[in-house]
Length: 149
Figure 1: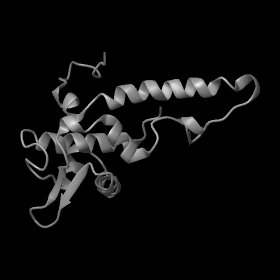
Figure 2 (figure 1 turned 180 degrees about the horizontal axis):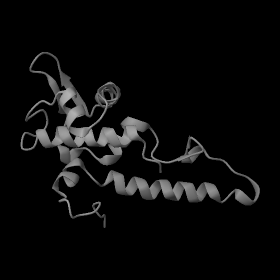
Figure 3 (figure 1 turned 180 degrees about the vertical axis):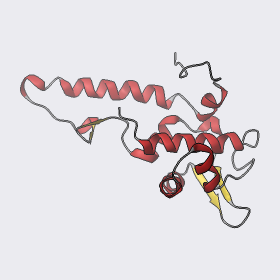
Figure 4 (figure 1 turned 60 degrees about the vertical axis):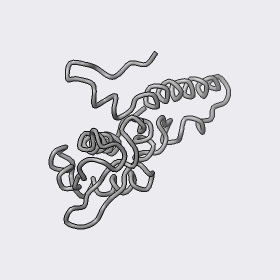
């Protein structure tokens, strides 16, 4: 798994929007402006705007126009996983030579590598699909990544 700047920025932006909507659930809470997200998370605004568009197209965010506009989650933070965000921002969770793990093909002595890459992909999917934005918001600064059982 390679975590690109785009994926990292997407997660940081989603966490900031989720934090602003705490207690409000889907569509509740404060709308967050792209410029504010960019400043607080130290993300180039022009890059962030493209990411926000992808997150909106994936159904994770909705936007409101106007002077009081901004972005909000489409559902509660406990209903959006890290995997949802990573897939919206970057496509496949695991790539091999730029291809999704399931498309990596080998023959001869290397044929077993496909199974390894698929197992790696499955392990990553298990972690990111069981970790929600709400889980990350409840982690304190001394905790490491949430664990799964």
